[in-house]
Length: 304
Length: 234
Image: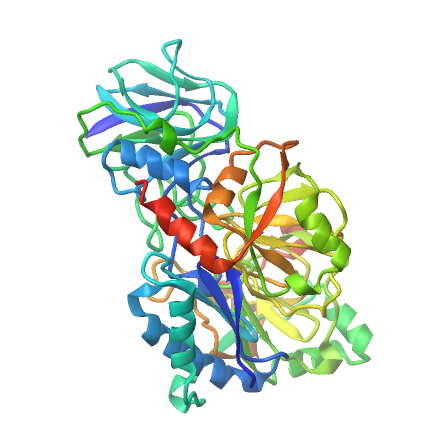
């Protein structure tokens, strides 16, 4: 077994995996890495299953010291990582010698970095997953939903020998300003014509009101003209429009059911990219139909 | 019933069975859930029931949207409500008291009934569990008598005690854990509504029925209830 000791952390540094499934009918949220692409690449670099527990570091402020010689992997945001002061770029596996310190300083590109270990970080499974959901008190190192804390020990049992990189053309482009694909949902026709034009033809600014439940987008006011809705299941990436007309994209820790009308849902790849955007960033939306989005997702998954 | 299948996400479809909330929906909803679980088997990631809908989240690597639609359509053929799928009946003890249920007086005032009569009426009905949501094990139940219906508080409480029983419009519910909440509180149950170590985790499941039984403070405490008044906890 190899160990790391956490020397610095924040409430936004969480143990995550692919999420909690099969229990949403009980009101239990999905949880899991907000940027599933980067989590998958971090695990891929070490030959892990793509869904084993990793550390999601949002915005920085996290540091670990190696208690043994370790081989780890880093993907996702560039949070100004350093090993004993030397810069470490993401999208690669790397060695961290016994006694060396890995530090995440501040966001240089993107918002969330994923740190993986051979075989995945050890953590108990609660309702089938180690994903940390603070609000529901599930997951994490002790199973009680706590963020990673200074002084805690991280451990893993797997082995991985080779250092490698994610091929450049496979890396998600965190600088991309391509529109985010939105699978059109059932209520799309009940927004005003002007609103439908505005959704796809104007820029949306990420509000500072953003967390793992949802990200609020600011822009033109959208107008829903349909009947009030009865609460129903909410998929990952759903874009709901509350009465103030400003859309909210729902993320991993969203509530399981809700009654606001929806434009549709972002595709998984679009959602992963949104999860890497900081407040103030501008995004655009592009409509896509379910079949096309499905084919593109299947193609994307072949990269791993 | 006029079933429709709607797109909600790349790998999710919404099966819409009804247009209104009604207790009579439940036998159909349960029968449909059972069929969908059988039809999708391992390809089902999650099935999220709500009052009138079932959201099917399936494995996109093994099913295309059109295949998933076909499975849903097949699962619905010859659907009939089925007594075998009826849920469990739970009796939840409740200590109805102003110290843990401050809106008892508000509901009495709105309805023109005495507080004792509000309690009697709330505990006289058998309620359906329509859906779970908001928090793990939080069951939306109904329907309460029209005379007891009341809108949510205009300013939700930051902290509602675990076990708190409340009313919002014609629905009633109990909070499984401490959380923010805007329901009109009328009492508190000592029942453990969600337990990660219990089979099935949640005491109540969609389709179950629930009756509330008024108990004294002493009984409530004996059953493990925490009788700390709401203001002290808040």
